Image 1 (cartoon, one colour):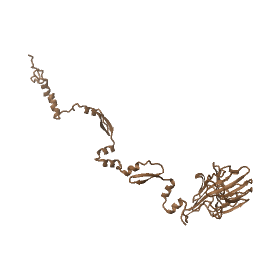
Image 2: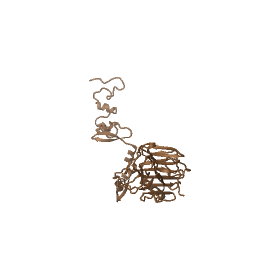
Image 3: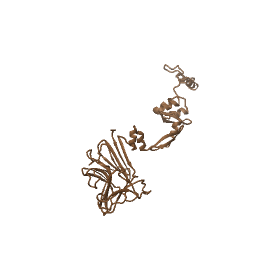
Image 4: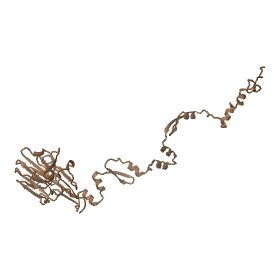
Length: 387
């Protein structure tokens, strides 16, 4: 029998001695360590400091959650992370669909809006109703937008060039009457020049009525129609637009030269080169070649733009020439068939230079007759304020 008597304060304590009669359980328990049923009981009573092993919790623990992230299941005991923003948390906190729409500023489902959303919208289109919650589209042009933006009836009249008033005046002539004097023009010619109706109008030319200015066969034959007095001045609180559809019967050649002029001038009743003040389109091959030329002059000093647009000499090809002078008279714009070809800001006649409007054709060489045909003209004057 071993001797368990030992020196020391614990020689008689079997729990700390090597006495085999004391079990390990008793020794551990005496030191506060529970095992087996005691461990289970401790866990059940909440005394344990460890989480029971669980596959779901292990998967969550391995996910590594960071700020602004949430977990979602991807399978049995498997998880992934997704970011969650501030607005996402607000949505999760909403109690119903209405609250969610408020959070995201969304419109509730509506039959009218659904019908509008179904339109295949495009440029220059405007929707209009065809029935209850039914819509179609119509074309809305740039010109139409200017109309609906007008704030007064007078503004509309000015836009569509109708309704003469003390502020806006329109003179349109379709030349259905061959007598140019009866149409409001003064006239002047020499060297056998004259005016008559164009007798060869055909469908191809698309001219309802046309007057023909002829040079005659003289080497200096000319003819002009123009306003009866020179009363127009630029920079006088009045804007002017003068445009016309014209045709040249034939072009100049080296031996048969002529000039054709349309626009503003102080001496339409005389031949080309005699004016001092003007703003017009001119065809003068001997000076500028076979091109339309925008020409502006004051006191005989000219600014010109020789365009790359060549006239066509035949019985069917017409061109629309236009000149626009703003109310301040600071610039003059020149157009051919609606396309701006020039803008002049120098040598513009001032409010002391009186001019008229008109057309002229004059021979400068040769004896073959040349003709300028006028299908229609439109002249508008618009003051900045009513008088």
